[in-house]
Image (cartoon, rainbow, N blue to C red; front, side, top):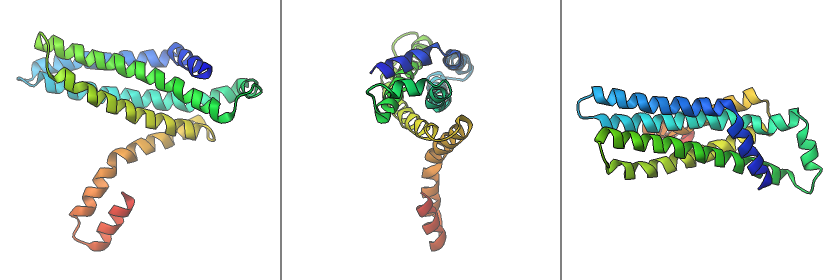
Length: 200
């Protein structure tokens, strides 16, 4: 828990994090403006752009903060002092993971509140879509938790640049795997169908 708390404080102090969250909130504010230009589709545009911004910037935070967690400790040689204490490597990694997960939770909550307030502002009052928005926010958070674990895995044995690249590839593969399955089912050729199903 001490490592998780320290990781959270370290990540919150990182200026990149503030810039990403600020940019996401500006994007949500832009969605309000774009929504007002469309005829009667304000709520849908705000939700679509807001959730997309939340996922995209959450992915950036998970990747760019996650891949540097272990690498910074090794580079600054603080890892050796930590592992000299009665703490195992698994506990150290799990503490780092919990700290970044807490950081992501705060960011997702702030961005989710931004989207909710944007919906309330556009509708000039309570919109039932706000309540339906939060399960999607929760699922985005779960996806970011998985991506953080992948980033931390790669960062434990690779350089930050390669770890970021591999984690981003995992993210892209995860989002396009359903397309492989649909390509397999729509194909008439048996070998092509088998190939796409195997890739899926």
